[in-house]
Image 1 (cartoon, rainbow, N blue to C red):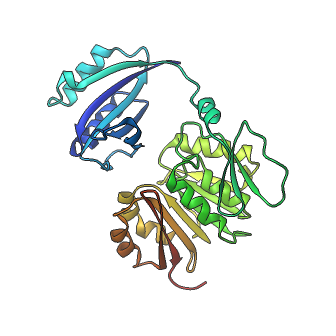
Image 2: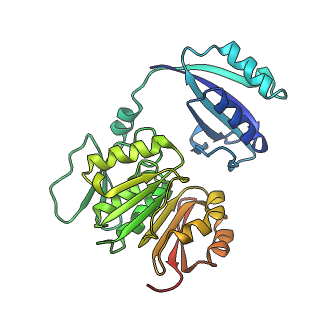
Image 3: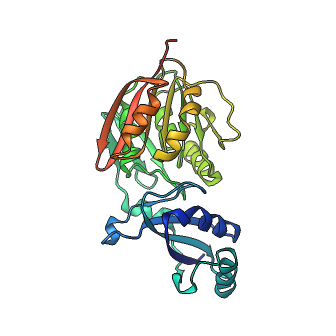
Length: 301
């Protein structure tokens, strides 16, 4: 089906209120870009939760609505909710129907992470090889294909662990790629947590495709109630990573390996200081402009 896209350029401090208003008006998805990037290729895209500040001073916010949404009515309703928003700052355009999942798989090629972990799109048959571990992926509308440096950093970290018989928590599971990779690498069970119900659906679908659905449980953050895990990984954003450090500490057994990513270079020092209260042997790995922090939960089994 086609869509109606509404684009707004706003200041970062306005983002929480604008996103809340768009959500109230029925936006199906909201993404954000750096409005000050010189070229489209430099515009990193992400989808924060309501109330999470973006990474840039000025942002271009794109919201998708059903194609039959009344533009004039939507503009007037948004103006009522946000009186300071100028009408000429709103730009509408029709977005043609496209099979986004198929387009992704047409462009995506198999990739290797670490020594033996491969991510394959669902439309490419992997070789029969006992020396490699393959995750078959169809990301749906959730984040996490392995192409982003933060996901790649976490996949390589998982590949370097002995996961046989372990329990794993993947916080911010997106497409489920990290939890599924852990299961394919030998973990006994995994828990995926995400605040987006669509991500939980994508994770479950991908787990079924990889024949590990019976070992993966998925939860919204407010619903999760599981025992501390042998291994913990979280790939979200630096702000929530700082806020959730005590929650993550409670979710990891003493001595458990952990990794967090979604951190831009320059943000790691504050998080290293924050996590030192509960985790030890902290190390930093960098890929492009993104950072992974790894270590172990303090204490012993």
